[in-house]
Length: 456
Image (cartoon, rainbow, N blue to C red; front, side, top):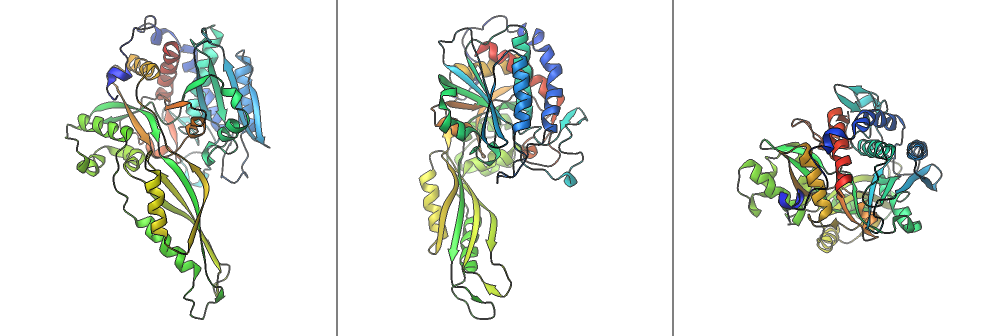
């Protein structure tokens, strides 16, 4: 279901919605900027090989805030310095299924030489909070902490139990974070049926209309290592059995392959809404034309109409005049929900004989429907703050910790609400240079999340 009748909800309001956003979350709106800056200043860079500073310092910071608010957070360390924080808030009706709100504490590395500001400064300038993690995703971590701290200080418990999870290692697939917790401590998520987290709830302006994208699906992940083997020998001689040549030809075929457009419910629901905003007709054949008109968000959603593979790492040889016996490459494959079998069949055909593949990380795609009371609560909370907005589902080209929690049967949504300026290239901020989030967007998100917790 893609219309606002599903998102905004047709059920009765829980209390005077017109009063709630204006009078509540005042302290949280003041706190959220400081919290975001503090979290950004804690370097939690995750290079993916377990060599970074880890998340322990950030986890202790979060745990202290939650403990001061009256909760009993616990830090779980999967490896030295690789730490996640879990806390549970009792709802007024604990017989209802619980809601998981999760965010990750790690960030991708940043080279300060490329930035206008120190990426770990947390500076507030030009009405934005700057730094690595400002949008991915210490902004959401800060919004959740600010809202929870104020609500508990005021004695306002949620309607249902809430499990809070601030997680390690999302940027490398969750092996030391969500995946580890699901494998080793599934009891922490007992009774949880639904979850909200990152990369959703933010606005994009298309055709003059603000659409709030709710992530209901994300592509599967196939990070693969490819290996070709040949005959080692002297570089001056004819070497027809050259591992480097075999591998290079294979990854060239992979990297240049034109993957066909494939339909998924979430991706095409977004495209239909974009067409309505643009005043153009939607057809399967004009998908490329539609994508060309939607602006910078095409970076995030453009890849959700097809499978993709991008070669990213090459390793071979040790000396210019020695032909190596083996050559390896690493590639980032992403496949649409429902198209995994087709994806791997095509990959194997393109690789051809003589190249082996193995998984570095493999997660299936996840997808849920855009309906139900939780979606209605999202819509009501957003529209209370922005009556001209419109909620629409979409598919994420990347991945989140929702993949791990889906193994527990948890239905997940991307909902980290931000009202953004029409000219801000928000999609480009993810893992980009000069990452920043508008202060007004953080304040908006705090108001929406507080209202959402009253409704869900």
